[in-house]
Amino acid sequence: MALELKDITYKYSAGTAYEITALDHINVTFPDGEFIGIIGHTGSGKSTLVQHLNGLIKATSGEIIYNGQNIYDKDYSMKELRTQVGMVFQYPEHQLFETTVYDDVAFGPKNQGLDDKDVALRTYEAMEAVGFPQELCDVSPFELSGGQKRRVAIAGVMAMKPAVLILDEPTAGLDPMGRDEILNMLKETHERTGNTVILVSHSMEDVANYADRIIVIDKGQIKYNDTPKNVFKHYKDLEKMGLAAPQVTYFMNDLKNAGMPVSTDATTVQEARDEILKLMGR
Amino acid sequence: MLRDITLGQYYPADSILHKLDPRVKLFGTLIYIISLFLFDNIWGILWITLALVCVVRLSKVPFSFMIRGLRSIIILLIVAGVFNLFLTPGQEIASFGIFKITMEGLRNASLMTVRMVYLIIGTSIMTLTTTPNQLTDGLEKSLHGLTKLNVPVHEIAMMMSIALRFIPILIEETDKIMKAQMARGADFESGNIFQKARNMVPLLVPLFVSAFRRAYDLAQAMEARCYNGGEGRTKMKPLKYVSRDRNAYILIFVAFVVTIVLKVVL
Image 1 (spheres, rainbow over the protein chains, first blue to last red):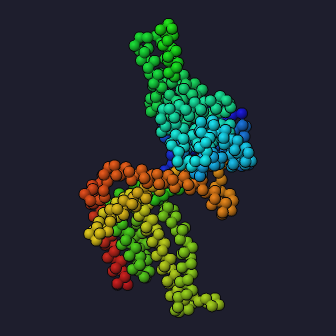
Image 2: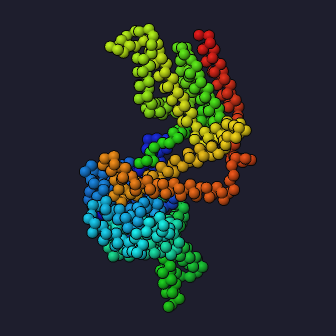
Image 3: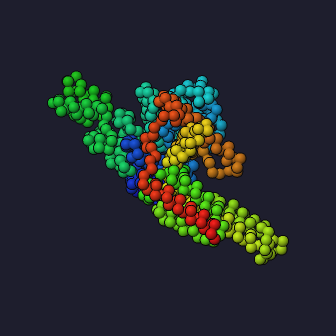
């Protein structure tokens, strides 16, 4: 059971003077229960790729198989797919529209056709998961701060309890604390429910800290699909794509070049600390 | 989805018409429209057809793009044509019950159809070969004299270019919000007209909010840079006439004289 892309190609404005190939024969599998990071430079096609996963964009050619079924089959229900594969867009707070926070979060579950009791249950659950104070649920979402709006918007998707949760740059424009809170919340939910999380980001630190596996996209093609350690070994190649490795990777490389016998595998601050302490014999 | 809509319908190509100063094209289009309504005989039609064919060839834009605009006026064309055909008094050539086709009616209907079709094709050529920004630039410069009459030419041009600039942004925004709501199970397609209207709320509210937010941001950005209108303001790409523009003016003038001669002599 997994989400599988077979030979996906997508062209914007196909057949006109403006034709652009955004995705170029992509083959990739997202197994259940993984926390996957997708990184790529602006315009590399990462947002286009994830929008294919719940059928919001239809590929120019290729197949997408979800749980053994081709989602482009005529009798396949896109609506059903979208309740299974949830998608949080960039700046999701721009999609808020209801008069109260509660109604906005409940919009997704209501569309799933649940009865009022289940809708309420899921809405409060989602608000709790994102750390949104319940007493504010009757406030207009437009009166909240930027960080709170973001939480409400993410809760709106999580309330649908998707088996696969896709987030396109969920931390863009947030302060470091807000960023950590949201990512920790995602990780915690992931560990608690075993859902698949696909995190699109261009913060190397974020994906290194949270993802089990990283997919690197450049010019519409998948360049790497591996663990953070193995991907960031190629930091010189990543730089050519306009990306970089986490700062600790550079730090460890500098240490090594300065003559200290450290391993340069570390991708998180924690790992780097352990490595250095080990070297110092503590 | 929505991204596939081409707006401002500019068609990029490397032709002399694309390179021409927008003021020349505006002036040429104006003269062309006047000419269309000057002629009233077969020689005039032939002459304008010849001129139009030359311009179409020069523009390097596929002809199918130019007649696309005709689709929107086809009903109007048929209605106006039928009315002209049956309701013009004059020498009768055929009759169906109370409806009569007259010689004058036939003439009026065909003349009017040709005029309308040529009007659309001609103006399409202008918008297909000129970017919206060039067009507003050209308008601003051409109408500059009106500032003496207290017409806020620069402000109008500015509003036009901002409005044009925002169309693709708002389309992209609509596309994004639509997708975001569809991802939450919203349905924009099914239901009767009232259900459809109600289903649009999750799209329209965020769209309005974002339009106001963007307008506010832009106003602040302009104010922060001390923007205060057209007086003494220079352009990054000022419009300058080169020799091909002068030649084009001469050609337009010659063509117009020929039209008048054809009108007077024949």
